[in-house]
Image (cartoon, rainbow, N blue to C red; front, top):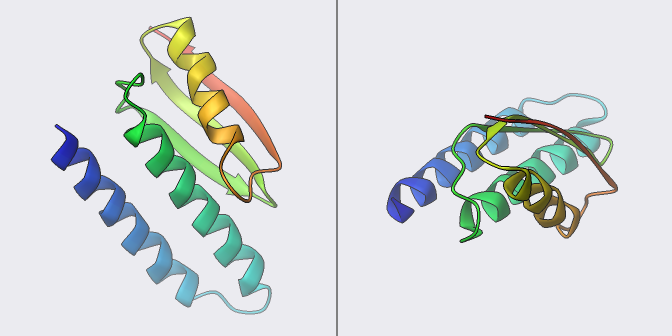
Length: 99
């Protein structure tokens, strides 16, 4: 399972970096947000107390939005706490739903 998470994080990182290379004017902001998104996803997937696979992460101007589903209120809170500690995150908007 950890190997799957690692591969998923690497694939997402590669995709985001590839998209960042296509950015035109203002590409630095796009690249920063893409890198922040990648770091948040990696932090969430690497946290041992979070057993989530259905979390979507987007970043705009340093504001991270979490959406998808988690299994408990504790996982929802933990995802916010983990995302908040990531470099480049200014604010976290948590729209995660508890199943």
